[in-house]
Figure 1: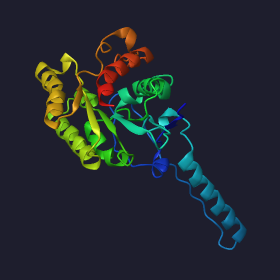
Figure 2: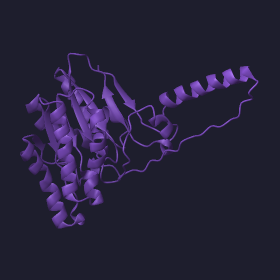
Figure 3: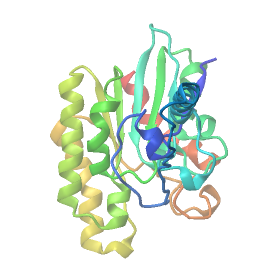
Length: 271
């Protein structure tokens, strides 16, 4: 059984030990506050100096390794990876809170990328899922961290970004440029990788012209780049209360299974 590990990128003092992430937020708000410790040391007390030096080193190690103690000290939600044997290929899910599994009791087991991993394992297919979903992520934020994420070799890249752009009313052309730039970077780094783009939609309340342009952006990008398209990631889930959490946006565990089926219908043909 593949071991799933969760990594939480927390306060600024811890972020220095992790990859630098761009600021982002649409659905949830998290804040981090640096902690400063100052203390004077008597020049003539050598023993005290060594003791304090030891304490500082321990504090630094703790800051790099420990999880935050509360949600208010958390800047990002989850980055879930799987430990893969060398003979397995990586499928990387690059997205926002829908991919991260926001609000689920156990995102490492219930988010739709995890459901895909369970299916791969049950079919004994040699693939390892990497969940690089970050809650509140926009296409601009994704572009800012794509180089870091691509340090891991990728065989299949699933791009699920844009929902937060739509909810913020970010111009469609700006979102299009960012998604295109992300796609270009993946192709440049891994020319043989198969790319799948997840289509999204915004509510009519954003305006008919905007909603239509936003929806059309995804098939247009897929056609331009000759990549696969999931027509609508939340098909048969979006707008159905029993399959969504109280916010009406994020799927429940049951809803995530349906989302996984939407993804699998396109992914299985490319394995």
